[in-house]
Figure 1 (cartoon, protein in one colour):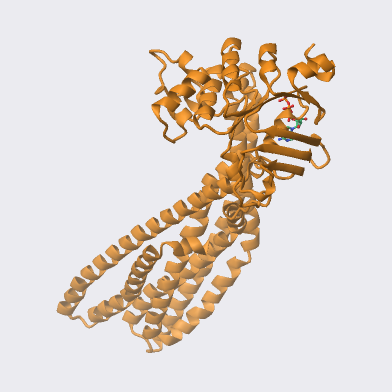
Figure 2 (tube, rainbow, N blue to C red):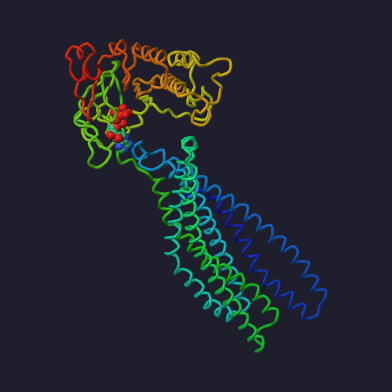
Length: 557
Ligand SMILES: Nc1ncnc2c1ncn2[C@@H]1O[C@H](COP(=O)(O)OP(=O)(O)OP(=O)(O)O)[C@@H](O)[C@H]1O
């Protein structure tokens, strides 16, 4: 976390300067009080008024320096939080798709919101308080030593206790803080799951069950938070008690010295004031240090996300697709033992058209996800123009493939922005994409390109969303287009037209995964790939497969 603290050096220095000014002025209050009291005891009214007059300016300066310290320290914390959140976000986006999916997305949300907030409250703010306290401590101690060295030594002995005792509780606090963060994360995951399933919950009368599920998670958060707070309360009260004992002990000792004639009453007043300035920072230190240490697991978790390194795809060469994509003896499973793809070998030639058929669950989507660099942990080879996927920068592969799934994600933006995806295109490019995808067919006076799609496209039908996604894929003019049931929700006529147009695009390599077959369209594909249980069991042109009367023939019959 040092990087984030020292990133804003100027702001840090300004904050520390004002912290120092405030600390020194706070310490000097003791001398001011001592002098005023001693003047008062000499019954010199003119000097007394003078002292009061000077104090007004002094306290004004104290107030201003405190305000400026508060202002700059808050700004510093906001900036630190902001950079941390930015880096966390970048870290998440450095992940490859497989690693990203291995964690529930609500966990990321929790890291970006809950954990950042926890860090602000229990790490950065306490850290600044401790630094501020340390400066006040040092300057007050110098003043105290100036007033009475012997009393200063007595106070130091009392303070050692104040530092040692609360530190004992740090490990317990770490554990409880970690549990709290985990429970918060689980509540975020549950909340997301429930809110996404809102309609299913409503229409299946699951309200009571869901409410009790939510309440359970919420209670767990409450209990873990309360458990942390109980320990804080305990540590705080111990610190307070020890602080008071130290302060009162010093005063009693100083009073004894007055009786012995070794100290003036003004000095006692000064000591009372300055001893507060000394015990308070120690108290802060003993309260805040366990908090800061308690955040260690959360800091570690966030740093792990920020410093993520892709251990799957390590290559840095730029991929190309001028000739073919070759898959050699490809084996892959999601779990440890389950083989979803078995020994697949195939060659996809540039600008040819392929359609993959097979029963549900036979591995069609998995195959195309491996082709397009979603999972690194496969056996065998995927070669783009003879270059191994593991040797190329995976982003250069992602840039060449447009994949259209059955479930499309829509940003809460206009239809046009959902097609453009924040890039710019010419009117002609837009027009072509709108025509081929069939988006034009549902645009009318009421629904235009500027119509907002709503959260994940709630304002559009399933088929309309797929058409927007087709337009989004086409406008980018990528050389490889993969349609994974990408037109399944579109009416037969429009879907036919879209597929037909795509099949006639010369500069496009098309891989379609589908359950639906139209013989006219099938005839236009260069090759049909038929899969069963994770293996390609037949491939060839429509005519050759019909003629051979093999598995594909039986499947479509
Ligand atoms: N992310 C995943 N984690 C674990 N198993 C998965 C995952 N995705 C798919 N599977 C499993 O892998 C197998 C192949 O799934 P895949 O989605 O590739 O099949 P498919 O042929 O595309 O099916 P469908 O036609 O129903 O879409 C299935 O048994 C599926 O349950």
